[in-house]
Image (cartoon, rainbow, N blue to C red; front, top):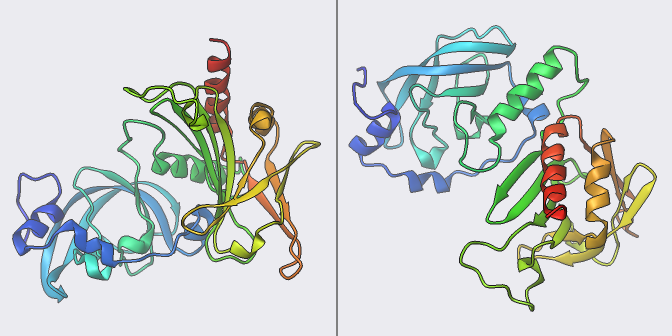
Length: 306
């Protein structure tokens, strides 16, 4: 049965007709993965535009199994030995909904089976603010395929919203299951309709913060993390948020020099010591961070020149 519906996504029409709702997807939990991990763990990596789909007589829970048809636009890995994706729309079982007419970056096995945990991301839609990760993934894959980069380091992202500029990146840290992340935040203006509060430093233009989130390492309390850019070393103070993740805050006066220094290096070195876990020496690759770092530097420079 082919789905013929004016709604842009035939999967969305299917969800309405069979009485399912998007919030069911909350029952699905997927482990996070890096671009390199997704690439190495997939038989096929390519971009494709969704052209249509059909529901089959087989079911997964309350949802029929689906066939999704596509046109390949660019191939990065594999021979793509299937003509359609196999999926379903049951959010409880990590089903996935792809929109007709949208281009996606696909990670798929030779069986063509996909789901919410496949790591698929849209590349033809861009958020109103900041950078979409899909296009940055594609750019990183192109550079890797062309031999311009030796690895598939996780792309960094720049976002600007409500008077804040933020640079974010992820990197492997020790033997933790989840990657650590680094965030540089700089406020250029107060949020709209907000009155300055001397008792809230983070609401003051010029407020700057660098934090490193180390998941699952609560017992690193009291053992500062050091970061090196060129010959400059920054020692951070330890803090913790309400999610009980380790957070390291850098001296705000060093933010401008720190961000500017990132333009000149390919790797950010991070190190911490612990009497039980020993020394943990991590590296955050900046191979796919150049444009985002440049935008962050431009944001800070523009504010300082005002």
